[in-house]
Length: 243
Image (cartoon, rainbow, N blue to C red; front, side):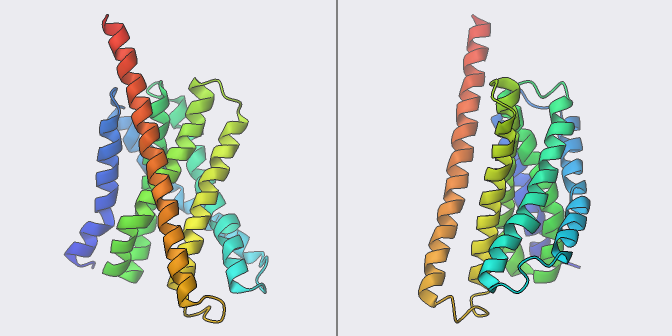
């Protein structure tokens, strides 16, 4: 059984992030839809684990240098499957609901889907890693999943509401997966630096840590600015309708 504070940290980031993004939407989404989206996001954990295990069984680049293999693994075997199945939820469920009727809905549904997956993933990591893992993931990993989900949802919204070409969704998937894999790779390399002592010096670890926080900051800035802009669009439309 998890200690109380560890238990709280396992779920607190999801609650806070869901509350934040939900309140940014002027025209609140039905809670029933968001609940379904969250649950489907949780269920994506099952096919993701299957596909990741299948890809790992191919043994591609198994004999490459650990730093090279980890970069490939984080992109092809981890980030792509995870972001792909999140995207499927957004396209096949969220975008088909009547509530999906304005651009900011793409962000909210993308975040909700991603947090559903991240919550299940978080439970397994925290059970194995304890309080330290819960704290690190609460600050970095869970929010990052939300930001990657925002990218996926926004790409769908661009096609739906801004008449962008459908290939925009593919670009969204690649952008989310690239950030996801880079984030994981940097974190994995930093945490496992002792195992790569011949290749990763203390100076390199410090540099990678800076890059990690830069990537994290870019995700935050892009997401918050996009949400703010879309909320402004909502306010302008509401003001016009009130005249």
